[in-house]
Image 1 (cartoon, rainbow, N blue to C red):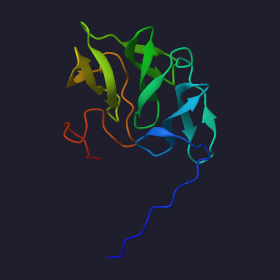
Image 2 (image 1 turned 135 degrees about the vertical axis):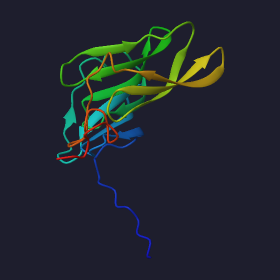
Image 3 (image 1 turned 45 degrees about the vertical axis):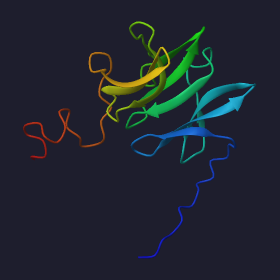
Image 4 (image 1 turned 120 degrees about the vertical axis):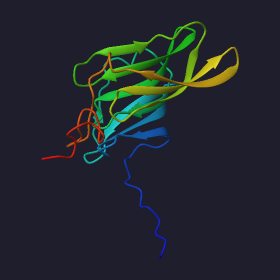
Length: 161
């Protein structure tokens, strides 16, 4: 088997960091430096068009973007005053979902499940790091891949005509 290097797609913006691709591969979120602040850009890969994000402009810097399967949800760590906050923007409804954490826990990094129903957070607690998974099913509708059953492949009736 011969190895072949992956060809870059040339999305036209230099200095990107923290890339996150939606499950369907349609959207790319990444962090860039703009005006001395780190900000998240969301780009449609095929056209190269930058998409607006309603709730992220006023809270910078941004880090650790993560996208759901179809790119409906964008989760990111934002700065709110002196504290960091995990925030999810629902691009379909325009809703903003801040995730308030107990005590002195602050998010460092995050990863949104492809269906948007769970989020893993790396949390800092008095200088120590821990990872927790939170259930978002009461907060967000599922963002499922085409043909995926709500309960997943092991749910009764899944995969049957």
